[in-house]
Image (cartoon, rainbow, N blue to C red; front, top):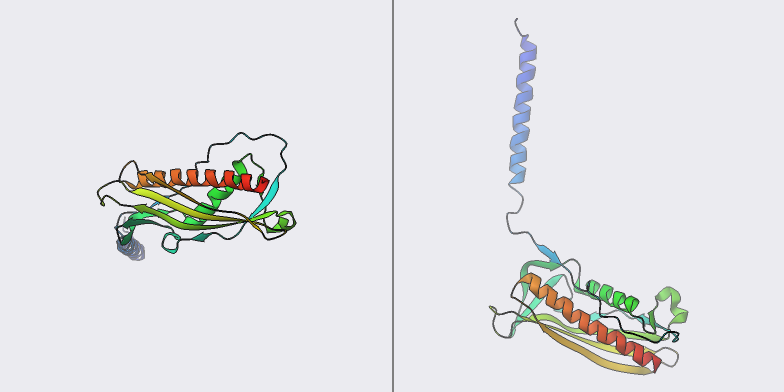
Length: 214
């Protein structure tokens, strides 16, 4: 049986189109970056250990002002310091900014704590008894013994607690801690950041409870 010329031409044209499309797709694939993918990490998921508190104690409202943060460490990159040199860990970032992760961990720490302090937002401004101002002055991994060794995570937070009705500063304190990472690997460094945050926030929440009650 003789195949009509028009049908042959149609089939050939379709094949040419498919081959051209495949070639274009192959060309597009070559445009994707071939470098190592960036790994995302987070801190603040671990909560400070719960403290035993007397039941029935009156609560007070605390409003948290905007958190100040060391500018080089405020973004989503993991800051390291070796002597006078600063650098960021390659191919590793926080899932969002350090400020955002810190604020989220801070709120979770207060929510989980059984103490008298209770966080309030702007919608409950009439219930605010104290304003807590925080300044994260240091948030970095320090290579004090060279870049081949495991770094020490250093976190330093300055806290000021103001009473709203008379604007009196009822407390001012620095919370500083350091944790040596278990290894010079990103996962171990992130775990050390997490442990440092647990310690700092646990001490800070307990301090706010005590100062507010006093």
